[in-house]
Image (cartoon, rainbow, N blue to C red):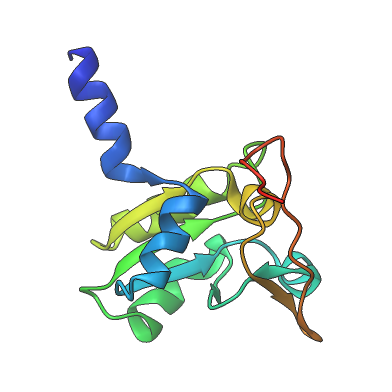
Length: 134
């Protein structure tokens, strides 16, 4: 496999928080799925995501998500592989799926909209992961 093929393959199966947020703002039809556990979901999640822990995907996805949907999964952070586990489950079911690298951590650090059971969470822009304009 050439380097170009390797990186093209990665891009076909991965996305990042900035690209997902841009897709949402552009009105693209994606289903954003949080594959973490219930305690993580309650603590904070991406606004507009649905909650489907990766262990439940095989059973729930065919009933709850259209087979022709484009799915983007995420977990906590780059240190968490639940997103890979969730993406694998969706792929085995035949979905077009990408993992959002960086997970919830980088989504939140980039100041994208998050919420918990009480409502929207403060948006904080981290200069270590993005350009912050005053």
